[in-house]
Image (cartoon, rainbow, N blue to C red; front, top):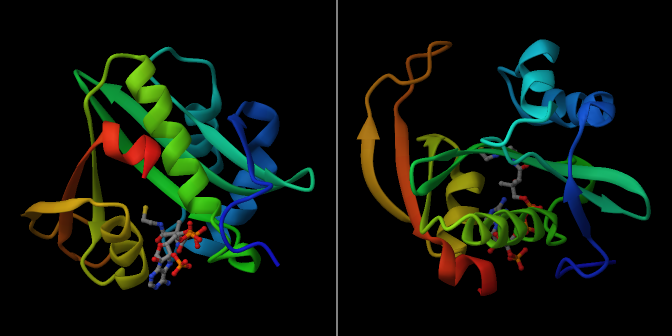
Length: 158
Ligand SMILES: CC(C)(COP(=O)(O)OP(=O)(O)OC[C@H]1O[C@@H](n2cnc3c(N)ncnc32)[C@H](O)[C@@H]1OP(=O)(O)O)[C@@H](O)C(=O)NCCC(=O)NCCS
């Protein structure tokens, strides 16, 4: 079985990926985005960088991000639960970093739920630093968000 992301192909996502992305979103999050929210991230927009990861031609993960000033803001990343710990998330993050660098961006930032220990471990593994807390950021349960930052340079090649 793959363990290091070999064989993962990452490409720009488009509206035709909506169904596959929605399945992974619904399996991955307790408060999944609506179809219309997902679709708006997949529609062509120079400020958005939606990516999907494929293994053997099957969509197994996605990452959505925005270009905000000189930062790449990651909104959402998820790997199909059947394909965790095989490098899919890493392949998505690295490709997002490469594309961010190509746009002249320097840093990436994101928020993660305080209780999301797997997500936090994943980001720490890639060198993200915790730079702050947004109190009661998540409307569904009032949970805090941890703010994480990372330079794109290291991330693209880590
Ligand atoms: C976070 C997430 C995207 C990681 O995806 P992934 O494809 O499993 O990640 P990778 O296989 O590339 O993991 C790379 C490294 O990150 C760390 N990591 C990933 N998942 C981890 C976990 N559950 N526990 C501890 N460390 C973890 C490990 O160091 C791992 O390397 P290893 O498997 O060789 O030990 C995935 O867990 C996920 O979809 N979670 C649900 C959605 C979510 O919470 N997204 C983040 C908030 S937006």
